[in-house]
Image (cartoon, rainbow, N blue to C red; front, side, top):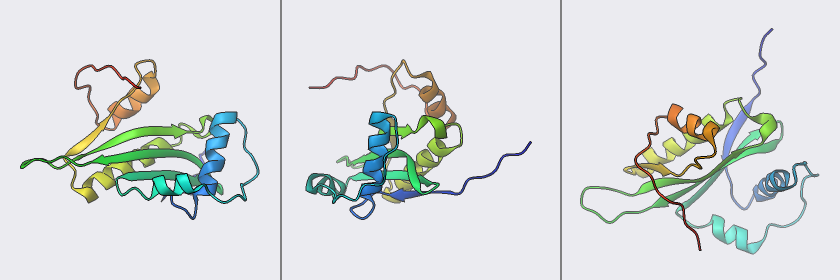
Length: 152
């Protein structure tokens, strides 16, 4: 038995490809794919994507997006350190997991960190998500203490 390598690429999401990204969001929310959206992207989404500190990348495989990573660069005012790249969200469609797509997205995050000359990368992972913890540990992340995630 042999594995067939599926061609895939990582693309930055922008106004031109946001409709395909929106289709993936629908897939995640509803659990089913839909016909490709022909609608015009919302002004709000395009405005968010134009933020210079927001980076959203998606894996293109078999003509559709199957996973994404959302990254935020947070500048830091300091004489000795630059800012950090934060992994805000990482998701791969369950039927496409265990094919290396999450690693591709994490590699894109690391490439961005180097490009921005950021001090490092940070992320939060849910303690109830051991698969994600194993992924991040295998990418070189270590637990640096404990924190509560809070929202308002």
